Amino acid sequence: MLADILHHQTPPSTEVWRYVASLAGGSTARRRFLSLAPTTTAPRADGLDTDAAWLLAAAYACPALRPPRAPEQRRLDIALAEVCAAIEQTELRERSIALRIACDPIVLSGWCAWQICVIVAELLLNASRSSLDVRSIAVEFAVADEARCVVVDDGVTSRRAGRSRGIVEVDALVAAMAGRVDRRSDETGSAVLVRVPRAAL
Image 1: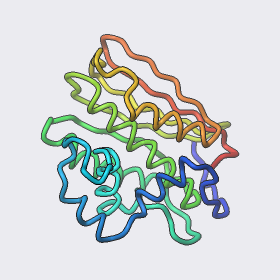
Image 2: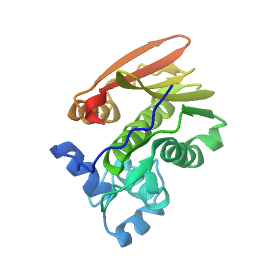
Image 3: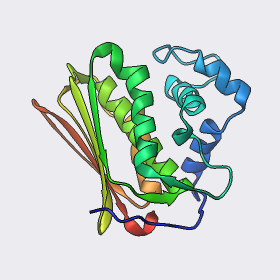
Image 4: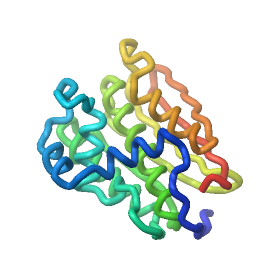
């Protein structure tokens, strides 16, 4: 059972999180421009790759993917539901991929909730783009002695996927929270387990 956890406001303290915050917290005009861009195009002329463009566009439409500008608390279950809805609308609906999320009510600082949402968004994008014949994806988040987030899909990982930029980014973001990532895949699907110390929340 998850307990409600209240924490003081703590901004990201590493370069990787400051960089992501600068992307997601870009100017309104830039977010509006990028929100019109397709999510499957080649890198843009201004140097932003499609994942960065997607994050800017999604942050414009999805408050959970915007870093907080002031001290606040966020309900993680509600924030993750927003993220999943955004992914479903932009990446999954046309491919008829079912998405399920399980997260009991939990309150975190705005920064912690945002960090988890960004990691989950990256995991979902990677699951939908690097696996073949995906029909369903499930996300579960729970906190006990540590925070655990698992993303499972029933697709077959493409041999050409390799160590994509999305995987590298997830590893860097989780490492910046003193966590670790475990991955498993076979002919029945793939699973990614993210573990973060409770003290990092």
